[in-house]
Amino acid sequence: MPTPQNTPLDHRAALGAYGERVAVRALTDAGLQVLGRNWRCRDGELDVIARDGDALVFCEVKTRSGTGFGQPAEAVTAAKRRRLRRLAQAWLAAHDHHAPDLRFDVVGVHVPASGPVRVTHLRNAF
Image (cartoon, rainbow, N blue to C red; front, top):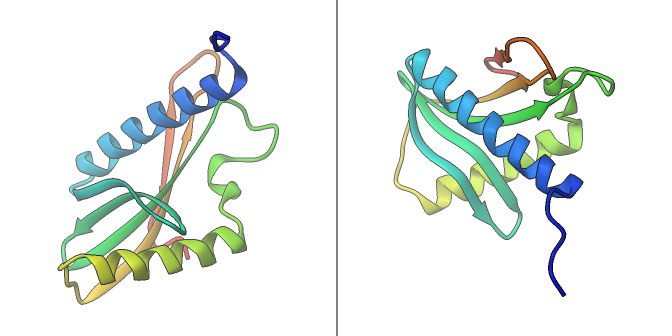
C-alpha cells in the first residue's frame, strides 16, 4: 500500500528540519562552532552540540509555524530539560571533548505563514 504524501507528520518533520538549518546558521553567524547535529542514543536526541569559546553548548531547537501554543522556546518543559541534561552526560561520556564550561541554550525558530522567519537564541536557558 503506498504511503500518503504530505501528511501532517511529513510537514512537521520538514518544518523541524528547516528550523534546525536556520538555527545552525544563526549559531554559526553568532560565532559558535558546531561540533555535531542530531546526535542520538537510546534516551533521545541532542539537536546541536557546539563550542562557544571555552563553553561546550548543548542547543535544543524548537520550531513553530504559529504561536497558538506559545513561543517556540516555551516548549522546553522541565521534563525536557531533565532529559537534555541526561543526554548531555551521555554525549560527554561518548566523546573526547573537554570544556571548562557547559551551557544549555534554546533556539526558537518561528516560521510564520507570511513574513520573515524569527530566531530567538536563549543562551544559558537552563
